[in-house]
Each structure stands twice: as C-alpha cells, then as structure tokens.
Length: 279
Length: 279
Image (cartoon, rainbow over all chains, first blue to last red):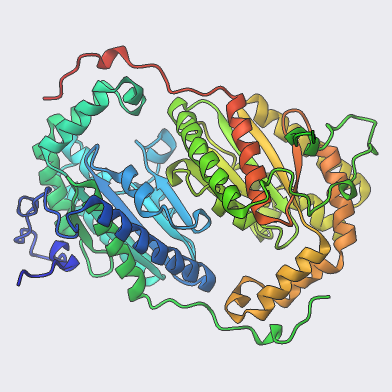
C-alpha cells in the first residue's frame, strides 16, 4: 500500500543554531508533485469547498474568542500563484474575518525604518486571520540576489526574523508559512500565456522578467532563507505548485490543520442573557 | 402595469443649504418592502450570484486601472444586517481586491484626534474597493442620542462630513452610502433569536439592548443625519432590510450600478510586451 502523503513531509526542518547547512534542499521537492490531489480537478475543487466551509467556522470561532491570531505567509516566485491561492482557499471564508495584506516594493517612508516596521504594523489582531501576500522575506531575497545584502547581513536579518516571529507567537499568533514552489519551465509557460493575452498585460511589465534571469540565485537564497527561519513556532512548508488545484488543496489542508491544532470553540453562553426577553 | 422599482426612489434627496427640514422621512420607507426581490429566495440568491460575478469583474478593472477608488458605507441599527450584507454581496468578489473596515467604539487614541482622523486613514487607495462597516456617521448618531453633542455640534459635524466626502470624491473616490432600514419589531425578533441560541451569545451583551431603548431617538437622528449628508458626490440610500435577500439584492444592484457608471475597462495592451518570448 502506498504511503499516504503527510504535510510534515513538506515541512522545512527546523533551524538549529550552528547547523546552517542542513540536508534540506529545494531540489528534493518536485514542483510537479501532486500528493494532496485526488487526481481529478472536480474532486479537488469539491474537497477545497469542503475545507473552505470548515475554515469559515474555524475563523468564526477565532473571531468569537478574540484571543488568538492566525498569520499565513505566502511567498513564491512570480506566477507561483499567491493571488490565485488567496482567491481559491478563502472563497468560503467570510470576508469580515479575513485581512489580506499585500507587500509591494517598500516606499521611501518604509525604507526609512527597519525592515520589520511595516510588517509589524500589519500583524493580525486578536480574532483575526491575516494573510501576507509576500512579506518580510522579500527583504531577505531581493537584496541578496541584487547583491546589496551580504552574507553577514543575511544571517542578521534571519535572526531578527526568528526573534520577531517568536515574539508574535509568544503573544498569541499562530504562524504558518508557505513557499509556493514552481518549476522554471512552468513559470515560462505562465508568463508566456500572460504576454500572449493582451487583456492580461496590466498584470505586469517587461521588467518583471528580470527576476527570472536570476532564477538559480533566487532558488539558492530561498533555500537558505527557509532553512534559517523554519521554526517550531513559525514553520515553513514547501508547496509543490505546478498544479494549481494541488497547491490550493494542500495549503487549505495545512491551514485547516493549523486551526484545528488550536482547538478553538465558540465561547460559552452568557449567564447575563439567560431568560432575557426583548421588549 | 406596475411601475418597476427604481433605485433612485430610495435615494435620500440631496442636501440643500438652508433647507434643513426637507420632506424626507424614514417613516415613508417601509422596512418590510421588497421592491428588488423576485419574491422567491432561490431566484434572489441566483440573481445575487449573477451580480456578484459582475462585481468581481468590475473590481478587477478598478484594480487593473489603479486610478479610481470605491467606498461603500454601511450603517444601520444593531441586527440590521451589515455583517450579513458583506458576506452575501461579496461572496463572488476576489478577497484580494476588497478591504472591509469595521469601526468600533473609538479608542482613547482615536478620541484624542478629530472624529474624521481614524476614518481618513482607512479611506480606499487607488484601485481599492473598501467597505466601511459602521463609519464616521456613528460619531453623529451616538453622541446626539446620548446628549453629548448638541444641535450646533451636530450641524458642524454634518458640514465637516460633507466637505470631507467632497474632497474624497474630488480626489477620485466614488462613494455610496446605505442605511439598512429595519423595523423595531424585526429587531426584536432578531435579538430574541440570538438570546435564545446560547451559541450566539458571544455576538452581544445585555448592554447592547440599551440602544434599542432609544429606538425613536435613533430614527430621528438617522433621519436628520441622512438628510444633511446625502449629496450628489456621496448619496445615501435607504434600504428596506427586514427581508435579508431583498437587502442583499438591492445593495448589490446599487453597487453594480455605481461601478457601471464609472465605465471601467481593462487597461490597453502594452506595446512593450508585443511579441516578447520568455526564455
């Protein structure tokens, strides 16, 4: 009997000080793998709907309790499907309880502060489910690839991130981080499809192709960043994302499992309301 | 043949300086009316889905153009259905392009500023569709009913609101405001239902019943506030809301019409991308 896929098989091993070069390699995860897919798109969509309905209830409990916070971080190369994930995974979730925070290239004001400043201000509040569409990890990846952040600066930022995320976790925030892992070939197909459809041109610019030129560098920095910041309190998962339905189902499953681990429930009835008749 | 309902029949007449006491009265709008309902809940839901899909496209065009902004303001007594409206009307809209802003009782920091300060900071950015779940209108209603804002203060705040909204509109924000109009009797039924279901107790507190004691005062202040702040650039609509499906369909129709009036379209193709082959 084939082994059932486990989410934990896709979790990046936790960082251990002094063991910088662990065995983890992005190359060991096949972007085309579909371990959480049923093989049928229709069945996957039905499963996604089912998980979505459960996430909706979990989120309502989170909101009702007003205690814990949940943060989902999405990272990935261009066209890896961060936007599509948000649309698909949260279709059944009440928009009232969901906050999506997109991070673009930092503004002058943001750059005038430390790199975690703009991120901290967007952290989820009690009862909130917040999704970071890109995040503080861009500030590890981009400057390293561009050569403006050296190895020492990189290590320092990784440490700052671990400590920042630990503080959030200690303060009641449950963090789960997903790297949407696509192949270079799949990215080519997706970019070309956008170029060939003039109605999609607004989605990008020729300069967006620049990052692709540094594909191997990005993969290497992603590997180092994930290895240095996957922790028990803020684990990284590598999500095979060449298949969109697989990507969606896997992230939805992961988020649902994360919620279920919190054992949320609706608050108990209020004695003060017992027997009250509205006049 | 019966006259088809017109959204404009439910628009509060525009404010005219010096004509404070116009003919508009909330009492003339029946909360139980269902002019935009087909009479069948299923048909109403199907219609809502259809409008939702159109709103999704409109919102994507708004986002693609990154020029205009759209602000929907929802006000109404407790249980009038602000939360339910958001869930139902935006079910088909991509959460990426939607921002819901709930306004609660002001914090100490917020009270230390002018009443528009916290509202201004949440105004929609270019390309954004933002929904205010309650709004700066609470700062007209609550203190007036509690007696901490006198007639002169009320008039002054109404003027400040008109001028603030005019500035937003002049700067590219399309504003539409809905007062969800329920009857006192319908509110009784809805509050009682929450009290009788212990799993819903987290949604409120006995003190929430206090506002109901001032029902008539609230209706009177709502009437004055709407009359003084319905303008061509930020019109108020009174939405009969005893029927939830009617409320949802009417607000969705109104928002769709508002979007359509902007004549949004996807940006033109980019010459720089023509014939580009991704390597």
